[in-house]
Length: 239
Image (tube, rainbow, N blue to C red; front, side):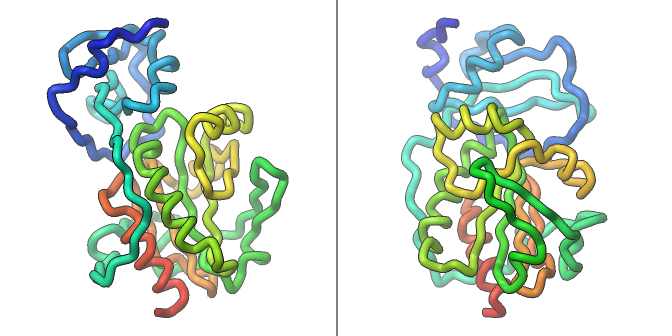
């Protein structure tokens, strides 16, 4: 399809913070840009491939009724550690019936796109940073450059592992990565695992300390996400 120039005429950047769920999508949802132009449901897949925009879902009683087109951030900065201390337990941590802060992480056995295996036994003694995401999730796309910066910062530390569990299948994940590099270890087909762990918001971040305990659980996009995760990683090592 042809994307009109009006898509890129934005009155201003509007941020939408939400906690999406597995709720069903309304059958006749709309797509609307900041100028009020409407696009049909059939345009969704094409628009989700445009790097310069994100599609933010509009919900009514938990049902996605449409998407609002907003401008994606253009200038992303690499991760730079700061001395500022965050109380992540108050700012970013949420409650989850299965993944409780301070509780033991459930057993897991994961295989990434390259065939590498990661499980709770082999990663014992390491800090594990987990992200749940899917390819059409606007906030998931928005935070990837910052997450990549965090991976780069810890690239020489073999005791920190970054794992991204995507809801999409391996083909969809592979196509996505050709357009938008994501430097976590990518685990496809993770929807069933997300449901069994009662994860209902995306993106979701989890940090497991070197003893296998959960020290951070947060749903949704947060500004300065890399700083919160970095504080969690340090706590994972007992710092």
